Amino acid sequence: MNRRIEGGFTLIELVVVITILGILAAFAVPRFASLEGQARLAATEAMAGSIRSGASLAHALWLAEGNPGSNSVDMEGQPIALAFGYPTIASIDDTIVDTTGFILTTTATSAVFTKGSAQNPPQPISNCFVTYTPPAALNQAPAIASTTSGC
Image (cartoon, rainbow, N blue to C red; front, side, top):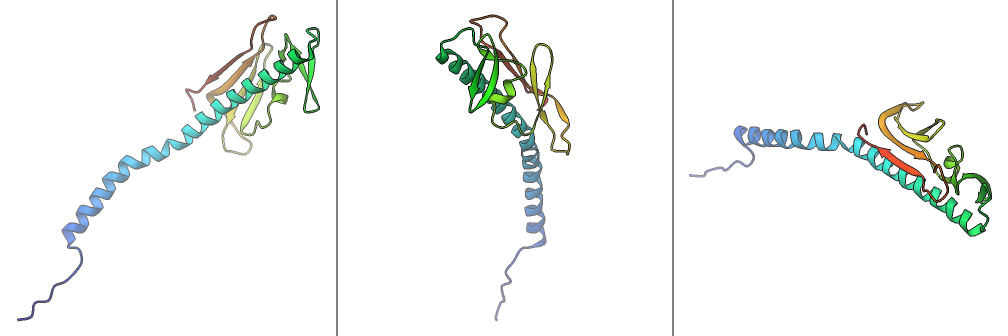
């Protein structure tokens, strides 16, 4: 007698494999869905670092000039207005190379860089921003705070 052996999956094996893939997908999809929020968080933290670096560089240039009465420095040919040796609210964005994806708003006391949505024009994302507050006196550093609870 010649027995013929068929290769392939039985219906039950196929159902089990599809069920296992469905369960794995249920756990993997939410993880990939949160990548957008993680990207916004990383961009906001990077903006805080850029603001810190720009303010520190402007302050270092001010110190290097050796003129405490000076109220501006030149960074790459662009004048940066200073208050107590650090960039003013109006000039902090001039110390940053790239502010793409952020919406700048200023108040009397601070500059706020809010992460924008991917829409055109971008809409601000609430509770996803960096605030720059210049020092109020000499020998103080500016306050740079990031709020990321809404990212």
